Every structure is written in structure tokens, then in C-alpha cells.
Length: 114
Length: 114
Image (cartoon, rainbow over all chains, first blue to last red; front, top):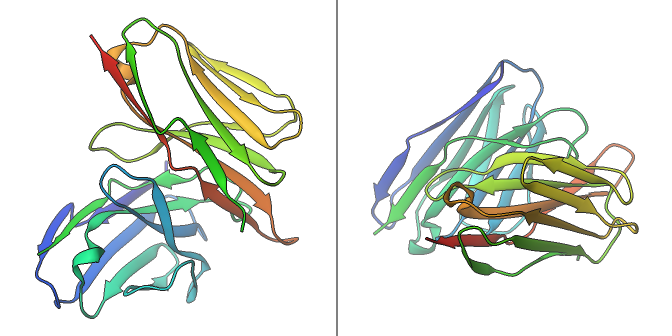
């Protein structure tokens, strides 16, 4: 069966510090991968998606970047965090046709920037 | 751009009462999905509707997809405390021969009064 992992589960970082969040998927190959951010009590904002290794699409301009160095690994990064980067970061994967199939979410990372 | 509007944003109901959340798109959707996010958790897939006018049931939950494939609803009969959480709809729209684009509604947060 397929599983999706995210780490760390929680993170407190000072403003201006770098960020690296990792997401890995097991039990499937060539998944579509997504990074979402959810502000407290709010909806899901799609940040990045990837349909294959090295292929990254950004939905909104921001202080963050994403990379997919391996088929089942998706990384979210920042060189210098801003206060507004705080939130709940969710990684998700789907199979089949991009944008159609069920999305399976990881447990998320709660990021607080102080 | 395409939007998926979800109403209401919040809903407080007495335990045992019914609950409905509505999702509306400005454009025709290829399918619609529903997710539930428990407090502190991550979104979990509930169901996908594909056909015009489709109705699906999961125990006390009834999902409908409109005839024009632009709107959808989730109805919960006789709510229980376990129904607490945020319910998201997510609509898929075909953007190319290869890809669809999925857009999440902002969610309806359901709170149950004992």
C-alpha cells in the first residue's frame, strides 16, 4: 500500500533562517506531487506541483521554492523565512492523470516563524 | 480565473441535526472530490463524483453532483460529534489533453453543539 511521509511534524524557526521540509512517498511510482499551505483556520493554498523528476510548477509567487530530486521525494525550501511563511504545510500525491485523481495528504508540518 | 466557492464558511449545529455544505464553480468540472479534515489533522479523501446528476451515499453522508457539473453538495443526516471538522470540495477542470487542474474550495467548518 502507498504511504506518504512528511517531516518534521512541527518546526519553530526565526525570521531570516532557511527552511527545508521533506516529503516522501512509498508504494507507488511516478506520482504527481503537491505542496499546499494552510493558514490557521483557513483553506488550502496550492504552492507547487510536480508531474515528474525535476519538473516543478509554481502556483503563486512567494518566498519559497520546491525541488524533486527523486521520483518520490519532494522538498520545500526557503533561503530566508518571513513571518508570513508561518502555517501548516501539507504534501500530497496523486496518481494517474494530473489534477483528476484522489489526492492523498501527508500528516503535515506546522511551521511557526518568530 | 476559475474559482470554487464553498458555503457556508462556518456552521454550528446541535447534535442530531442535519448539515449541508455547498460548492459552486464558475466553469464546468470534469469531476468533484470531497475531503474531510479533523481538527489538527490533514485532509482525508471522502468521495469523487464524475457523472452529471450523480448521487452517492456513505452511511449518513449524501453527495450530489449537479446536472450541469458546476455545483455539488454534501449533506450529513443526524450529525454526531465525530462529524466535527472542515469539509472541503475540490473541483477538477480540464486544461489540456494531458492535464486537469484541481482547485479546492475554502472549506466549511462544522462544529457540533452537544
